[in-house]
Amino acid sequence: MRSAKDFFTPLAVGAPMPVREIPARPSRAIHFFDPSNAKMAAKVPAMVGTVDVLLGNLEDAVKADNKIAAREGLVKIGQETDFGANTQLWTRINALDSPWCLDDLTALVPAIGHKLDVIMVPKVQGAEDIQYMDRLLAQLEAKAGLERPILLHAILETARGMVNIEEICGASPRMQGLSLGPADLAADRRMKTTRVGGGHPGYKVRSDAVKKDDGSYDFFGESAQRTVFQQDLWHYTIARMVDACAMHGIYPYYGPFGDIADVVACEDQFRNAFLLGCVGTWTLHPKQVEIAKKVFSPSAADVAHARRVVEAMGDGTGAVMLDGKMEDDASLKQCMVMVRLAEQLAANDPELAAMYADAQEK
Ligand code: GLV
Ligand code: MG
Image (cartoon, rainbow, N blue to C red; front, side, top):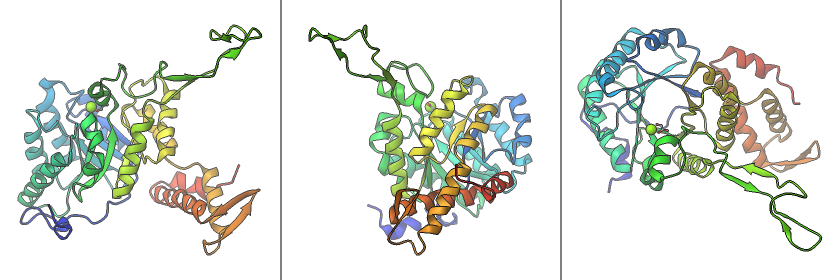
C-alpha cells in the first residue's frame, strides 16, 4: 500500500513534483489528427487558437505501416508549432500491450515532453496500468529534465476498466480525466452495435398497449399508436464516469461520434454528456469542433439566470422565490458551477466573453 504522504513525491529522482490539483483548462473539443497524414498535419498550425486541445493520434485509425511516421510526424509538429496559451497539445499513444507503446513514450517525452500537456492511454484496464505509466513517465521526465509533469488521461473501453473505474481515477496525481471509448467498449462488452458512439434505433421503450372494448390489448397499435422513445445506450457509462471523476477531482469527456454527417444526433449526444457533467468531447472533423464549442459552453440564457440566482441569494443561505420557483443553497451551488465555467471559458475567448457580458434570461 502506498502512503498518502508519498502520493505527492516524485516517483523518480529528478522528476518534477506531482501536481496537487488538475488545472481546469478549457477542453471542450479534443480535436484528433493523424500526424502521419501530411495533408492533415499541415492544417495543425492554423488550428491553434481555434480549438482547446489538438491531439496527435498514434493509436487506432493509424495504419500499422504508418505508426512510425505518425510518431515522427507528431515530434516534428510538436517541435515546430507554437501552441500559444490557449491550445493544449495532447497525444493518444498506442496501447500498453502493443509493439509501439514503449517507443512512443521514449521518443515523445525527450523530444516534445515540455510541450505535451496530456497523454491519453487507451484500453486502460485497472490502476496497475496507470501506476506503470506514472513510474515510467517520472523516469523519462527526470532523464529529459522536464520541469512539470505530463498528465494522464484514460480511455474507458473495456469492461474491466469500467469495473475498476474509481481505482483508475485515483491511481495517480497525474490523472487528468477519462474519455468514453464507445467503439472498443461495445466490442469488449459484446454489445450488439456496429457504430462508433451515438444511439441505436433498436434500444428503446414503448408506451403501453391500449385496452380494447372487448377487454383484449391492442399490442399492434391498430386503435392508437404506441409511442416509442429511443433510449441512450451510453447513459449508464457516462453517469459512472462523471461520478468517478468528480470523486477524484478530474474531468470526464464524451469520446468519438463516428457519423460525421449527422450533426444533429452528434449535438444531442454531446449535450447529454454536457448536462450529465462532462466538460468536453473528442472531435473527428472541423464540423464537430463548432458543435462541441457551442454545446460545452453554457448558454447565455443559463448564465444570466445563474447570475440572477447568485445575486438574489445574497450571503448564500436560506431560500428565495424567483419567478415562482424556490432557490436555496443547493440551487445556488448549481448556479455557481455554471457561472464559474462561463468565467473560465470567457477568459480565453473574447466572443464568449462578449456574449456573457450581454447575457439575458429567456
Ligand atoms: C475510441 O477509441 C473507441 O474505441 O471508441
Ligand atoms: Mg478505441
